[in-house]
Length: 291
Ligand SMILES: [Zn+2]
Image (cartoon, rainbow, N blue to C red; front, side, top):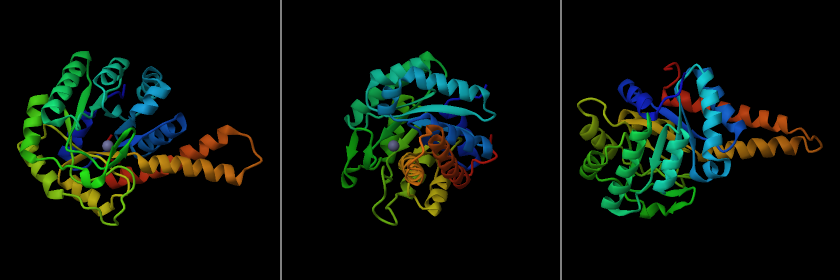
């Protein structure tokens, strides 16, 4: 049985100074590519879905697929709901069997964020072995239905971060440090490494308690990834790159085989392209061979 929550595997990662990738999927071919890469690299894995695809496919359907694959896989796998702004849908996914739930109440103000995050933490811990991720400050760019202009993105205040974690009881924590969703416009994005390191010292200085999450993985230079792991990043969310990989692989295959009508071959092209990209991420994050 390789079904795990995100906290178990990210605590190990934080201790070992590597990170686990949370790879976004919207369909089965992508999901197979992600899992194949983790199995090939012997890496722990977090499969991530946004709210829209989760509702489209159905939380129960996704969990059935996840449990079938994860039960048979030789590596630990978590199923993560990303950036859910609705407490009720967080509960729906917890009931269905997701093993990590991210409540994103970062737009609710400090006290509102605490209240909603704590409600989800209490619910998930009561339902079972489900970890909860919360966010403080805001990540720039677009994630599902949430749009934040990059200059509006507010970075997490370290003192508030400690209060937020204590008052919510959350398991893993995503402080805003300047990373963004989508594609970085600047070649060298402005990331506040020192802020992440300070938050990590305050929360985990005397032993890893609340592993830290870095959102907006797509496009971060490899040197930045190493520095972010050094500063405490133990989970990296990668979404945009996988969406692009899927659409490009799909488009390229169909363009090159316009007279062929064999959907299975398109799926294979997508699976293989995704496997390569995820394999490269696993190498960069240092999680290969850790399962
Ligand atoms: Zn995110």
